[in-house]
Length: 238
Image (tube, rainbow, N blue to C red):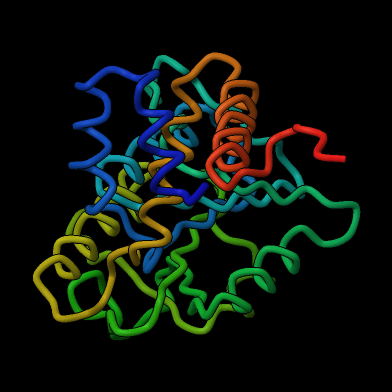
């Protein structure tokens, strides 16, 4: 059974309204931009960034948990964590290095949000190559290790007395600005057809009670019908 065929069959178990939402929203998702959170400890901020990713169309969020466990507040996420893929790094070795290596293997530029940037801002940064924007803790920002590992730095211009936006505001401003530029650019930021179908399948499975069991039955039925159609039934011809 192909993925499109499986999706058609699973769709019988979800509402027409939800399927219409999948068809509308999935083509607006991207993996050209992703987000890295390093040791965020306030659940409100952690949750607000997930919600921002969902609202601007960013599908993947990477979380480094070397010092602090990543916790979500359902009153802030409002269900957005169901639709965003959250990848957590909390290995016994360096979670930071594991995350960076994973992203680089997929072709991402590691971009640190930092006042160190002289030229890069959300409205000037190059959009051509995939981008992984990194945000640090509420008090001290990104670690020196991540700042040193970054391929680029980006800053959000500020015009007031205080030194920085909080992390949820920074993420919202930067990600919205970059995604709006991407959507009006010639950059290939959309998911390809195979990834699009995989995403819709994942979403459908999240809506179905005991989705694994339902899928197993559908696949078994498909095999049975295939055997009957090809004459390979259980008849003994000896």
